[in-house]
Every structure is written in structure tokens, then in C-alpha cells.
Length: 458
Ligand code: SAH
Ligand code: SF4
Ligand code: F3S
Figure 1 (tube, rainbow, N blue to C red):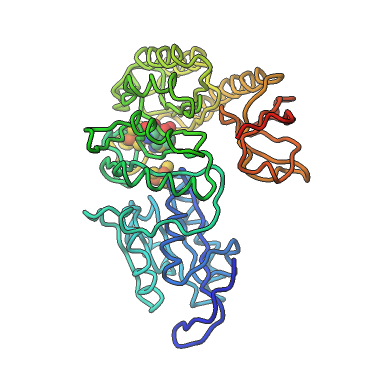
Figure 2 (figure 1 turned 120 degrees about the horizontal axis):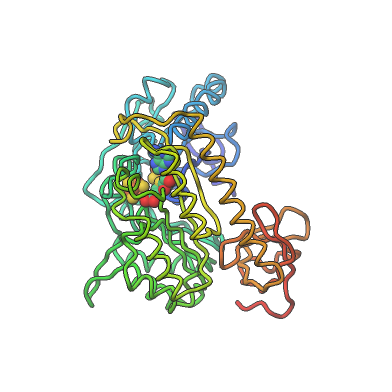
């Protein structure tokens, strides 16, 4: 990044802007939020750096979803201690879901932290950073009435990556009994359609070819315009009118919010990619009930049938929790059976982690070794299905959005319509284009391919 000139900091004249290093944990919403926080702090004279040792401020954007995720943040703070001892004017901030959940406790456990900011208060970050710079300890974990997105600066000028995220919805009212999200992100709230469309147009004007709409419960998104209420399907239809936007995705969806129109959109909207992340968590109705998921395994399977009826090639992915309190061997078998029926293209699976303050945390827990064994069995099955899905692509021609240079010189990497990572020999001129590529081989978590010359179609 260019040097922004000479600035005055705490009475000392220094050359160049102050440097900001952000480390992001957790979900894609945090990735999006980190980018917006960096923009917000730009107005306070910060520019981002990829080297923590050069930074004047380090922000950890944290995740609280499982115990391990939260502990990672405390370990990272421990690792930053020598840096802070060497440079006492270095400011350290904690943002994200751990900040929201633990608040003041973070100052107690790690007194070197200067600033703690929850996800709904990011628009207040520049003022907080300024006060922290003057030596104050700053904490803001409120859920303010104003919409932070209205107050965060618009993304700065300049070309951006071909695949962009756009948060359309935040928070959750579902209260699954294992989950911290309703507490860390607050109640379900949708951004207004005109703002989303404006942000999408802006992203496309600056080079985005694909947009992934983000929300903790993205398919619960609701909006309104002059022509009445809008749902996510309507928003997708409107987005697909934007010239230059070639691909639309959305994540994460709740099975109960997959309405008819959204299902139909998968058959009708060419720009909507044939990939759907639809977490089910477990295959036993008893456990689904205890989790407060409010759907049955059969209900979920029927939903998938309906989606496949309109888009037979759709790639499905899911999230699973093993060892939820009360899960018996038989319940776990039901999860394996459900996976065999769906045959996920990709999946994320976790051992249940008791989160303080959530209803399931106080229930009788499954033995840790048992959880480990179940996770190993589930992951082996899911990995087999993923490998089979990837193998089935070999010899096919897929459309790859080229996103970045590949692992080796002369290679570029991108994503297929089914969200496979694809590597192929190509030059940097293909960046940001959708290229037809013949799939040559399936590797562990990616495909290798060769572009079909003359078939680039963007
Ligand atoms: N909104 C999404 C999920 C958000 S959290 C949904 O409703 O599906 C992402 C995933 O983390 C969840 O799908 C779940 O599989 C996992 N997860 C959440 N809380 C967890 C916990 N306490 N222990 C283990 N995994 C958990
Ligand atoms: Fe958490 Fe359930 Fe809400 Fe998903 S739907 S964010 S798992 S409470
Ligand atoms: Fe983690 Fe918060 Fe996302 S808990 S998964 S960063 S919503």
C-alpha cells in the first residue's frame, strides 16, 4: 500500500500511516466484518499490514462457537505479549463473538488488551481506537438501535477480488440449544434491499464476478420495496439483473426457511450456483428435538428431494454435531444413515462443545472418547462421499471462476460452480474470468484441470 504521508501521533511526527493488523477467526461473516472494520479504521488514519510486528494496532476478530475457537484467541493474546512488552504503544483490540460473549472478562484475563468491541458496534470503532490510543480502556458490547452498516464507510475505491462476500442478514432467533450465535450476534435483522443492491453494484463495478450473500440465517432474510415484501428468492432475482455479476451464492441456510420460491430459484435462476449449504446437525429425531431444530430427519430429506427435483445436479453440504448430550449409539447411527442417503459433496463436522449460557451445556454430557470415536467414523464417511463426488467430475467440463494465482508458477486457482477448489495451468490474464476447464484429477480437497482454449465465457 502507498505511504499516506506525514502524520502527527501523540505529539510525535511520524512518517506514514499507522498500521493495522487484523487476524480473523470463525465464519465468513467475520471475514466480511474484518474488511469493513479495516475500512472504518482507514478513516482514522490506519492502513492494513500483513505483518503483526509492523502494526500499531492488532485486532483479533474472534469466534465463540466452540470452546476451542474461544481458547485460540487467548493463546494468540499470549503469543502477542512479547510484542507488546517490546512496544508498549502497540494497541491490542478484541472484536467478534468472544468480545460480545466475554466483554470485561477479557480485560481481567488479559490486562494488556486495550479495546473490546462486539459485532454490532463496529461503526463506533474509529472513536474507540482514538480513545484507546490516548490510553483509555474501551469496551462496547451494546446492541445499538442504529444499524452499523448505515454508519460504516462504503468500501474504498480500487479493484477487489473476483469473489466477494456481502452480508445481508445478521443474528438468529432460532435458539438451537447448543448454539451461542443468538447471544453473540443478537436477534435476526435484515439489511434493506436497496442498500444490498447498491453494495452489490459497487462490488461488481470494482471487479466482483461472484457474490456470496451472507447471514447466520441467510434464507430468513426479509425486505420490502415499493412493490411489497421481498424474500431471499426475490433479492436473488433482482441481483441477477446486474450486468457483470455472473454468480450468486448464499450461506448459511436453515432448513425451515427454505421456502417454495427459494427452492424454485435453484431451477430458474442461471446465476444462482448449484451448491447449497444446508446444515442438519443430526439424523435422529430425538436429538433434533433436544437441539430445538424444529424439523425431523424425514422433513429434511423431503426438502432435499424437492430441491433436487428442480436442480438434480445440486451439490449439498452440511454441518454435523456428534456427541450432543443424550446422543446414544443408535442416535449416532441415524446420523450416518442420513448422510448415506444425502451423499454430501462437502461437510463440516464437530464434537459437541458445551457453551456456557446455552441450554444444552448443563445436560449430562457424552463421554469424550465416545465423541472422538463417533467423529472419526462420521468424518471417514463424509470424506468418502466427498471423494466420490470429486471423482465423478473427472472428465467433465466445469466452469471455473479464476480467483488467484495457484500453488505452482504458471498455475491459477479458482472455484467450480459446485465450489470445488480447482487448479489449472493458466496465465494471470484469466483472473476474474469464468473459464471452461476439463477436470483431469481429483486431489484431497481440490481438482486439477486444464482450460479448454477459446471457451472462456465471461
Ligand atoms: N446458522 C447455522 C450455523 C451457524 S454455526 C445453522 O443454523 O446451521 C456453524 C456450525 O457450528 C453449526 O452448524 C454447528 O454444526 C456448529 N456448532 C454450533 N455450536 C456448536 C457447539 N456448541 N458445539 C459444536 N459445534 C457447534
Ligand atoms: Fe445457531 Fe441454530 Fe441459529 Fe444456526 S439456527 S445460528 S445453529 S441457533
Ligand atoms: Fe463464530 Fe460468531 Fe461466526 S461465534 S461462527 S464468528 S457468528
